[in-house]
Image (cartoon, rainbow, N blue to C red):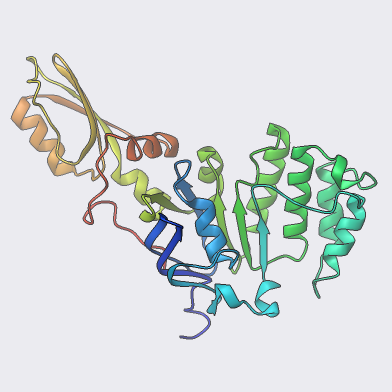
Length: 311
């Protein structure tokens, strides 16, 4: 496989268990260089476990995890220099002043953009002369982002990077991230529960459920396929009323509201004809789609629904 066609990140049949608990099961994922992928999943779905397996911080129980074609558990120093990582909880040396933490980190990288780092510290108001141990949680997370961006990595992996940032800092971070991802060869894996952030940044979405990737593809494709239907009939609808492919369906007299996972204009025409009904189709935002897909009563998507891949 040549370098151009080689995924920046690859999971092939990846499995991870902790004692008797299986967290990831035969998971497949491939990110082409230049992809900006948003990773979504309910709490406890295994997002952080997946990220740590991909980075070689956890050893997989089965399958493969690779970064730039190298086994994640045995990454070379050269490949590690191409990666930037922001964990959920940033750990540093509490006795060091912030500027010394930055200088210490910079010493590990042959290429370090001091102008970029100075600009980020100024824009994000990092107190360079304070000891890192005295920083607030949000300031510490901001420092972690700066350290991950300083060497301008080809692959940037973010695990809930803005969870502790205030709205202003989060806006600044997203503006910076949008500028960074304009580089055609920079790959980003962005895990967050703030779906509005993903809609601003990510072009691809991966949904993690029950230890597997349930959907992986373009955000626009996901929005095109998941729709909400408002069905108004001239007479009361039966309690058994159902819509094919519905994730949820509520019936109240003449009115039914259904969310479908595999939207088809032909099925809409059939509903209109069968029930002599007025059918209105509405778009959903990413948060609404996520809630519908991960509702405990919703069936897991079949292989024929929402098919997509990051290639």
